[in-house]
Length: 256
Image 1 (cartoon, rainbow, N blue to C red):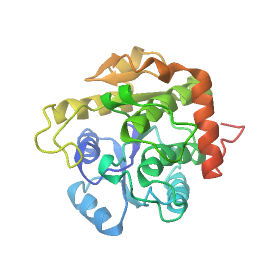
Image 2: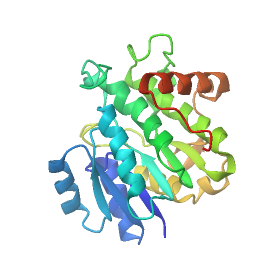
Image 3: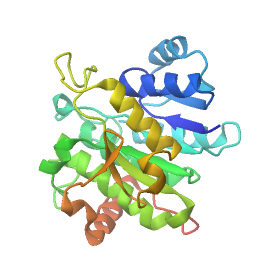
């Protein structure tokens, strides 16, 4: 059985995936941005190993979350699903401790910081979107001017970068959950949330298409898809990670 950490798992696809994994006998660590949401998540998924609390729009709390996750139990996860994210309605909100746009901090910077500070798991899953096809790296203006579409392109780029960085030690991938009826997607969203959970589970456990796909793959509806070509530009991937290291003050250790 696998041990899996899922960020942003108090509701939506994150919570549903956690409940499915727990029901199948896996160990799952949940994540909430507040104690109130943590209590709600624990009640909704009582079989979870733990619920960790940390606001990913706050860089200090993200660093503390990485330390707590790394010290919990064995300190090693089979998979980390970077599911937490905010949508375009948060574009103008600002992170309290950095002053950076909250959308950029939660969607792009926090996943990088967590990977940089935690022991590499067997699998990393970054959550993207079909909207990444309209995204651009925005390295010249970052952290300003980053849209939701840009951040979802960043998630694909991070998956491909870490696939190169970790090699065979860690399988990294990105997933497109579709436009599904969650709090973020809205009630009128047309896609199947059950299909999204299946895609998350496949990528997290390395089954199905994830078992044979090349490291760094992009998955849609449990099948390998083709992300925007720009996401595969290794020079852009390196530049993105260098920029995130500069902005966060967190660098990848040479041992990783």
